[in-house]
Length: 176
Ligand SMILES: [Zn+2]
Image (cartoon, rainbow, N blue to C red; front, top):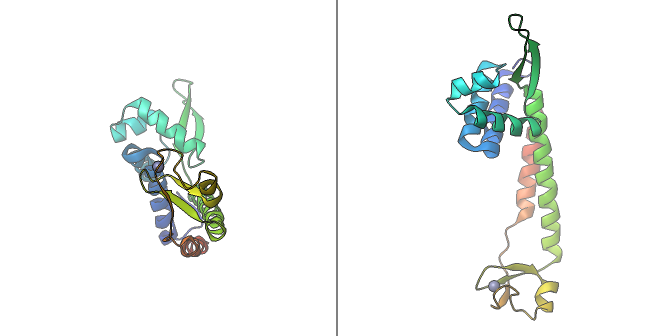
């Protein structure tokens, strides 16, 4: 992972990669990401050997990382066999962009939710936890459409505006 990033920034990005890898593919994802970070360009077979994971699992995880844009492949021709070999690699800038986009999306979704909660009241079924907005609750005569329990107005709502503020702060702090 060579680039114009400082060592501290690179460490942050490595942690981000591991974090995203675990989110996307659990413990095995974490192992694959760690193998790619510490070794650089690796084939699927090499990743399987390093992590001890079955090759089918490695292929699945590689497919997930690839579709998320976290890794890319470099094709090289093996001079001995003449076969084309696929090496998997990543780059700090690539990881950084994926993370920023995800954070941006989360901020957008939460902002929308915060706006909605400012306008609307939420009703919750006391029996099964079904949640709905006031219009719907009224339409159902304040009875749960799932189980018939009482729909009660939810007074204590999480403060999403605070969360959005914090996420926006995190977003700007990641301005590398
Ligand atoms: Zn219910």
